Length: 340
Ligand SMILES: C[S@@+](CC[C@H](N)C(=O)[O-])C[C@H]1O[C@@H](n2cnc3c(N)ncnc32)[C@H](O)[C@@H]1O
Image (cartoon, rainbow, N blue to C red; front, side, top):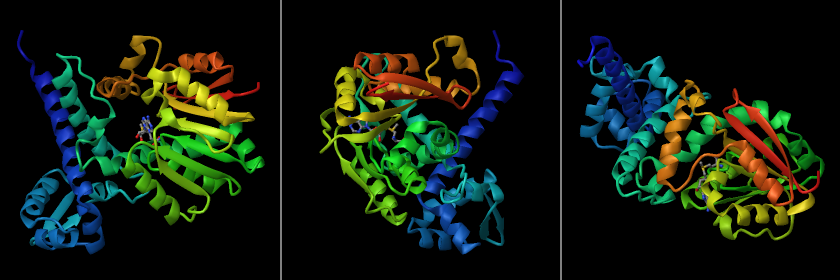
């Protein structure tokens, strides 16, 4: 069998796509895109000085970013192209997450390749192994899912309006950078929120962003472990967004905590990627990434869940589940109530 020209060209295009995102990531992680936008135009040395980065590295990065169409250049002065501007983390709808995801995927692929022989599954700590990626993790998730939450999930699921009507307290377990509670607080002026996460960097960002948005008095964030979490008094809503699959190995304990931490009228709102029942569904272009991410979840000791499994876990805890699907069935929200 020989490799066809068509196969070679297709894979070369894919390889260039991956490298393009890697170059964008370097610019994002070092603030180069944002700084160049602020300066409008700059030499590599000026950009390095503005970003507080090494001029040698920045010069090489400028060449690469120019080659891949993120920068234009005239007489040694670089400017962002429209494409380069679209990767700035601060612009609405930024392309930043694709770049972060690409580099994170490369890291996790390397880990999966390393551990495949022994079966070792080192857990969540692999996510923190790359110091340049970790600070972007929360922003990437916010960027990927914030709009879906606000535009579709929040209006469709009654639990949130009920929370506001009760002027209630919401807890977010595995809160990341706190975007979920921030969005709830922005929509519902009478709610208060408590976020918990195991990564100190996430909690630091969550506190900082909540304060910057003016919610410092209504939202509190703390470092902690979901397995040991106890509420000071029963709350109205507990959210877990892309967090349940991290603690699924002790689901009985987690669902008991959910049930006992909620008021009799309380609701748990679990949002997870919707792992399909049929393998053939994974080959759909919209689901491919989920299949790869599930391999990287395996490295962390986790796996994705089908919403029926989540609904069963609610029933076993004596709660009443309702399943909602979003994003062409790729995202599942399962609401569990203490009383039907
Ligand atoms: C995929 S992230 C989702 C973060 C956030 N909910 C979001 O949607 O952006 C999963 C989060 O759960 C947190 N987490 C996982 N296991 C945890 C545990 N046992 N205790 C506390 N946090 C945990 C991780 O630190 C991580 O921030």
